[in-house]
Length: 229
Image (tube, rainbow, N blue to C red):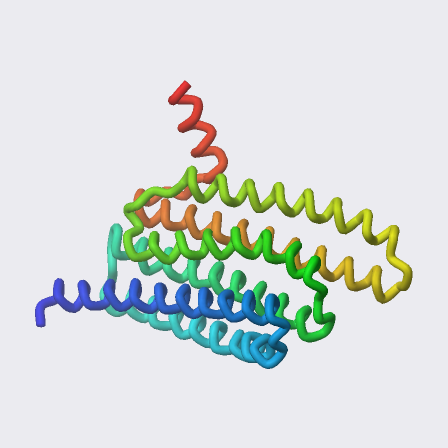
């Protein structure tokens, strides 16, 4: 087998394993949503236990990518894909942690339907961003800057509105346990907002893979909008 064919095979493996990590995280999110909505505590526990698998996959991917970099002495775009893949895998692992946190919360507090609704609003947005990410890794030449940024802004807006609503409910709480539960819900919402920030980091890394330069996504979008004026 020629050097080029070996290198092509290694690049395909890197993309395949990175997509597998994203798909496993998407599966964790699907199970988390189902566990939250149906109060399926056994499924919630499966998600919590399954987070170890995500961690192992991320570590295995990093070792594999670094080995292929050393073995093939990659350059240019191929090297950026391998290095960028390591950075993306770390962000995805952190996003998967959010699913674990929400399931731990579900097991401990068994949230009421209105509380599930609060979390679901932001959860849906993060899940949509995760779906975009999966598509972009398969074709990272596809630039989704504006779409990703709009969703992250919407996520931040939802967090502000919901946290304000829950802050008012804290004052109405009758017991310390009720107050603690509300504060814990806000913490889950904050985790989801941070998941959106991690997905922004993923898109910035994909931009690095495409162009060889890291750019602040917010700054790039502002420049694009200024040019269009």
